[in-house]
Image (tube, rainbow, N blue to C red; front, side, top):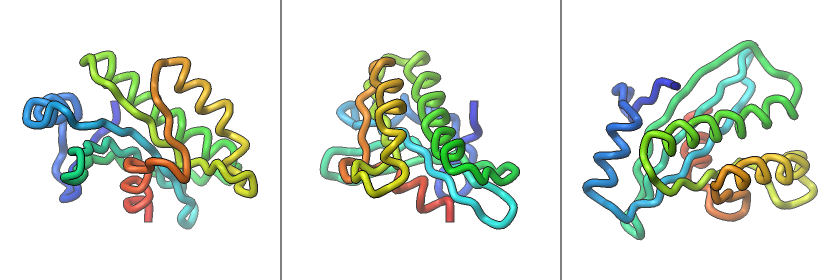
Length: 149
């Protein structure tokens, strides 16, 4: 499992944290999403678990890692889906919770990420997850994007 931290850098156990959030706010929505960016000679990946408290805001924890640069845009974007689904599968196998996966892919055909929607969304849907793509709900991917920079 990936190492998660809060926005201040404190290490967080994602399972215990999720249980605590749900205990205090049982109607929270859980979104998981990843984003990546090439910086110098590295590719930075960030996966976020975001907890939406109805109309009272969002709280999230993140996992950030870097690796040798992935110049192939398809491989880099596909890995975002893999990472989000891996975290969603791990968490949903620990506790019975509804999870939505936010994918940083655009439904507008002029964007390259559009070509991955069918396969990535189909994969996540087949595992039982609701998937959000741009321009719809992008709660977790917005947090991940913020921390990729």
